[in-house]
Length: 324
Image: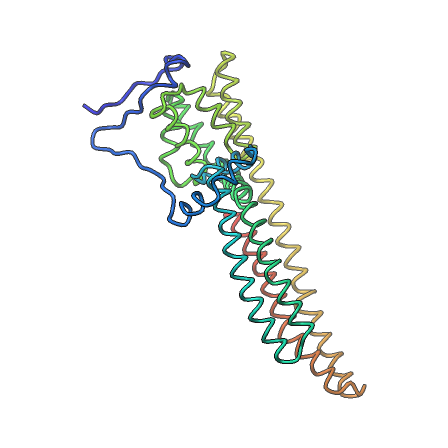
């Protein structure tokens, strides 16, 4: 028989759950999230500097919400190491490019490039890496919000069949079609089956580490309804209807936004550059603009029109992805 444990609500006291051994099924082995060689070198090099600082609770929270399986101090050491490496690389590149411009006779431009390239490269790398956990957490939150409506329909259907709440989240975690919602449910199941936490505590912990405000409200409502003696089946049906209405409203807003962008595209990217090209061509012919007008015309045709088109295409693609 597999070595599994039965989890009941409130069955494990807090004093015992903290020292409870984690049991896996027979034949399974625990998986470890190891550091890369660069991360190990970064931790060994910058460990003292990182530990000398006060811990950053927001960084730890963002790492958990982003599901980045690394401690906050290890990630901060990696940020320092990457910043130093990029800073040295951009410094060398700035010196080489600056010398090339200086030897070519452009002294001021060479000095500016030699100074600004390492400064912007170092600062940009540091701030981008510092904000990466928060950006990933927000991205996960948006993905959860996009899938929460069909996921709640699945939950309400399971509850209508009188399935236990722990089995509902377990089955939801297996449905990969629901994306990040399924991953959040799988973490709740992990807490109950591996860590020995009761289902209500696991749901409460899941609401605290979820990056989606809507999913947080849903999980907190589950805990409140269960602890106050209410029925979960009407609650699930109510939330499914609520998220379906909100999803329809958001889809309608996105469709209206795409329609407005389509009209703007015709005006800004098609009509305006066409009139501008005609006017500049006329000035070049009869106004005596000469080669300057021709250069401006080439800049509009070769740079402004393609960049504007690619910008609108990217924005429309982003909106279409959010509607999928």
